[in-house]
Image 1 (spheres, rainbow, N blue to C red):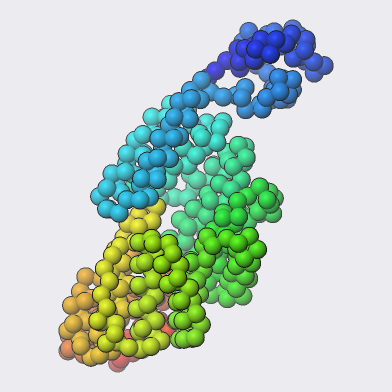
Image 2: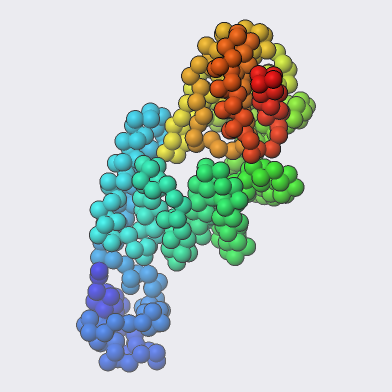
Length: 416
């Protein structure tokens, strides 16, 4: 650790100030001399006074000896993190996660990440995130210590992001109530720091709260936070997150078979995907197109004539979208009574761990119900019962939607 006294002495001499001038009327010249020579440790109150006399921020007096090293590490970490976000290959993603972890770990072990600067806190956050991605620690608890650390370095927007991550971890465990509690804790910081928090982080938080209330079947609160988010976006002319809200609204209206409203949001999703030219946006536009064709237009020939194959890529994750796309293709084949083609399409489907929202779960488990019905129609009752029991168990705690009603009806047909 850098000798604070030596730093004070260095800055005082640079400014050609005397001991008396820096000491002022708050501390004695003798005490200041002891501090400068490392024979006394100043209180935080004394440090704040000395910093004011030297016309600097108190954080400058508390920087560690390896401050430049931390700045260099911060730059390297952010460069590698951005490269990770752009990676599509699962193996390379895992390699980059471990590379980031091993880059930061020595600094964590030697106690360098004390949180004295924004850079240190950010590096520590990335370190915990890589541990989570590498499945070294899947708890949200380690992230909690970042809240106060970011508050001390005035990283108020980052605080919302940390609460969102903690909420998301609980969400993926299907603990929607606890996840929502974290999100509302983050919301308190919006009230506390107001304009000091970036509007994009506010939109992220409102989006997460919206989908959490949807998961808890609380339509009133869902609409409340949806309105807050859209109002903020329109007032500040922000397009960020609008595509996520449009997709969310599309899925809700499509599930309710509200064709006119679903088509309204489908057009917006298509326009956004065309403008962004992002692989994930294009993939989502393709998926909602299949959903609209199947659930609203009911043009199953059109669905099976259109083939899309790709993977979603999010921060630290890459996962196949096959169960969503093949679920729609399989459903169309089933409705066309082309059962063997449906089974071939659905033979390798698996539930994606990353997607745990009830809307996603109901779509995924519906694919198993479709496969069960195809087995049943072809006389394979054993496999039919296996799949429909799996689907029913997967949605037993979820609100009944169109997709879940399909699963229930399939269960009654197969098990009667």
